[in-house]
Length: 364
Image 1 (cartoon, rainbow, N blue to C red):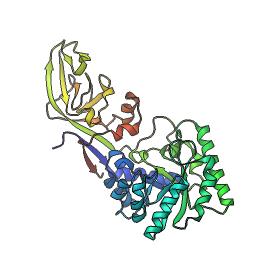
Image 2: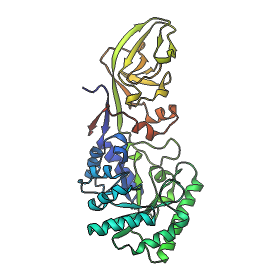
Image 3: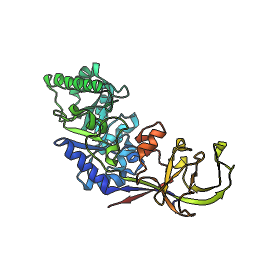
Image 4: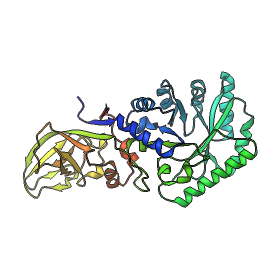
């Protein structure tokens, strides 16, 4: 009964994963499925990736981790924890972040209480300025954690704020993290896992996918998209198609104004189609009088302001009737074009596709 559907090609997600894995080999790939796999459905996407051999999935919070805990793969929380999440992290065996010595103490205390060993990795703030142990105090903070017997200190990782752009800044981050690794090794502490490269880092910061790094993290690349800036080192296949329906087609006379704010006036008679999708479904309001939808393969300009539930288009030059399917994204209408017109990023476009848009999963 859905008016709008988002078709998600699971086979292409699998192919993209394999392409990424081949490109970064011998490094491993952690698939980032936070925010419900960017709104695409974490459980369905994760199952497809597990079929392809994925061993590690990264998420943002414990609820996301709990949804995926029965898939037989390691689940890592890559951000930070709030105190009430620690008990579940320990009991479920998720890989935990450490962002301070105090944080490590709380993890260790809960692990002792449950008589368990927690696999934990240090998140280093090397320039993101958001979460993690600041680089300048990381050496001392990490060494203080050595004596916490219920923690398996398995890894260390950091994050790029601008991998797609400022190569000098990103290169300095890599150098400083590697310097920290060497200092800790000299003090008798080594890690089995070290990772910095996100999707943008894979394509733009070559040093972040070279030894001693042995893992990368990828999210948006799984779906065939990149940041709007930066390099694209290898091709990926876009996996999404957003489809809607014409709910009405009418002949309107010259002088008619269309939509809220009366931002479009018909200069002549026009066949106007009303589409059953609006900004509540993820259609950027910035496409008002500024975008296209595909009707029977023909690009039809958006006229008037995009509203909550509907978008109006000029269908004067195409055969179109009420009930026809049409394409909002896919078949040449790119997520990146929406992002550019909305002055945002591809991530925002994908994550903003509304909950009432039905997700439909396809293979081949």
